[in-house]
Amino acid sequence: MGLRLKTAIWVQAFLRRCEVNGQFGSVLQKGAEEAGALYVVINHLDGGHDLLAPAPGAAYDDAGERRFIRDFPAPVPWSEIAARMERRKRSDPDLWLIEVEDRTGLAGLTVES
Image (cartoon, rainbow, N blue to C red):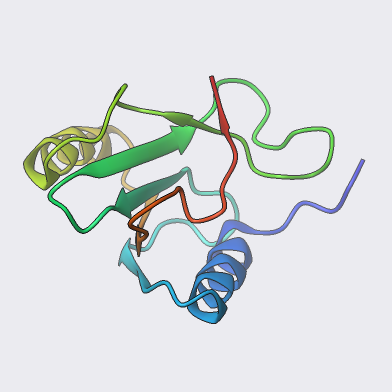
């Protein structure tokens, strides 16, 4: 079993990797340092956004990578992301929400189907 990073450290490392790859990323909502649920918004810079949510079950796969699923089947306007996340924040105020600009992909994250 691999090392599990605290959410705060994972976010810092991920945003740094995005920066190195020429992608802008930022923290929209800072959650619990240790193990807050992590949501990632991919802003495609064309009005569409993907929302990546924690996958059900274990937070990490066998290789030690965080597991994500798409929260919407296709990119949606920011207003739909904002509305869904406001509801989630009411039930989980410790969640993290980060955003990354990526026109063509998912900022290097693997998404389960």
